[in-house]
Amino acid sequence: MSAPSTNAAVRTAPPRAVFRKRLCRLVRFVVGVHERWRERQALAELDDGMLDDIGLTRAERDRECGRLPWDGNDRR
Image (cartoon, rainbow, N blue to C red; front, side):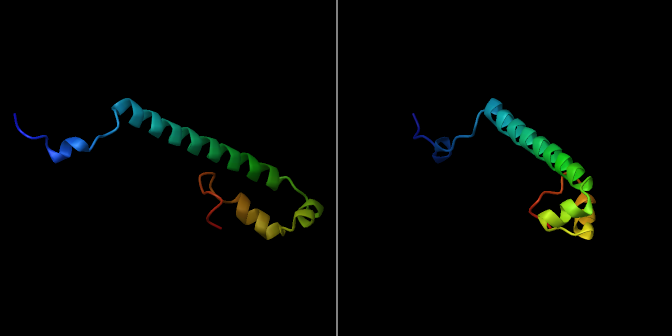
């Protein structure tokens, strides 16, 4: 018998685990997109008094509402 290969120590995740991980990431992404879409829809409905209460101008609101749903909150 030959000695075990050093590559044998490196294990890869089973295909089902990889699929589950990718599916979970996709679901989190879709949920995040939907949440941002709902938040921006609600923001679009605020009047000037409400915007003043939360410290936003109309221009800032319009810029935020004009962003794409998958454009996350980390890039302003």
